[in-house]
Length: 340
Ligand code: SAM
Image 1 (tube, protein in one colour):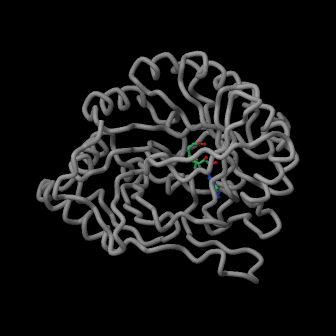
Image 2: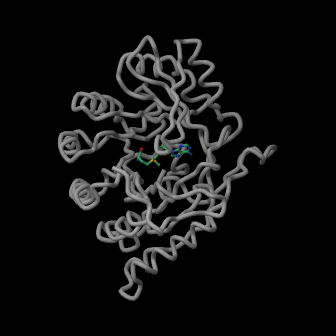
Image 3: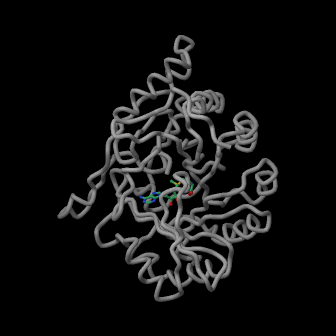
């Protein structure tokens, strides 16, 4: 159901409107993925600095009245936060018109799949970068591959749509393209390769490990027929998808670097400590937590702050222009603390 646009819409100076919020509900994660938290010594945010469920519920109430239609709960690992099902239930019943989505590593959902389905969570984005057990351990630091694969199957059986997100890492998982294509041929799910982004001070990003979307699609096209899927709905997201005439699922690519989608960006991000980022790649942020908690700050004032921040949303990012540097990072915070 679409929320009718009221006068209070978050717009920027380039004609873009914010209709999509990514809310990080924790910066904590039970995995240590090499591309997400490199160095593995990232300090977690102190508990009293993290948005409470009450804070988040309040904030959702504010943005829901400002034409935000879709909210993705992410992290960190959302299912690592205690009482997540309680929160989801509250959000689903409190904001029935909001399209609530989740991104998860699927290592902690086994006992929750039925409850998710029952409360109306109809789709999950599941991160999975390899189908090889030993490599999974190297990438994430944990031996959970079988667990994740089983949960993917249980979700499909329960009627929950699954989008598998694979961070494309040349020299690490490019040799597994065929296995992922087979998975998409055999199962009714989307497999989407996301270009590796240089995020966080100690990022491992280098030109040599960058595996571009065009290379991926070209190579996948050698393995099976691909038919481009066209989308008209702005909320379908930035993935370019291909259906597989010989199979059940689809293959897709998300190209934040080689073919960035800044010009149509409709997103705001809220970090686990309540900082608003108007652009993933910009460290400029706005501390909302004190405003959310202050009895002196009305919803109306908070809306004004969001509107003003919207006007400062950058047009785009310049990462591919930074040729010549061996290793670059375009923002300081790691992805797990921003909310991927
Ligand atoms: N823990 C959840 C999960 O694993 O899906 C949610 C958080 S995770 C940060 C969200 C997404 O960000 C995942 O799909 C992850 O693979 C992706 N991601 C993290 N760091 C990235 C990077 N440097 N480049 C591209 N994608 C990245």
